[in-house]
Image (cartoon, rainbow, N blue to C red; front, side):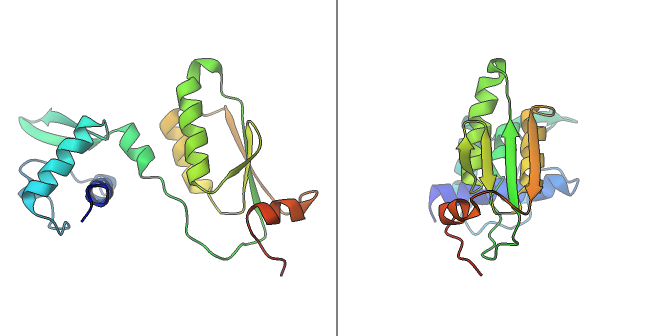
Length: 170
């Protein structure tokens, strides 16, 4: 199994445990056996996740605990895999000040990963239902008030956007 796959799997499992209100403590035996990898590979994956800022280790009641960082949470935002277009367009418009340039770069990068395409520098479009992902991203990057999200049925020159996303006419 590739290191990247183990890393993603570890992050996903930790997110599930934390979102269910659970805690993750050392030793790794306390983590449910959801990994199909040797303990040393799991330890290395956790070490790498901490090294790259996706996880942080804290003390809680004299026990070491792993917590997902904002960077780790952003990494877990994935596109919805849906091959059927529902006929609606999602428009994301943002005006993120220069003092938040790093957040703006992360936001644009994640929009691209979510199958969004830029219409203008700060206006992006997607045929996919990404509302939940956009909301998570806005909250994680503290961009409330800087981003607007629209859902619309009709666009001028819709054929141009259909071609952009390889959407055939019905």
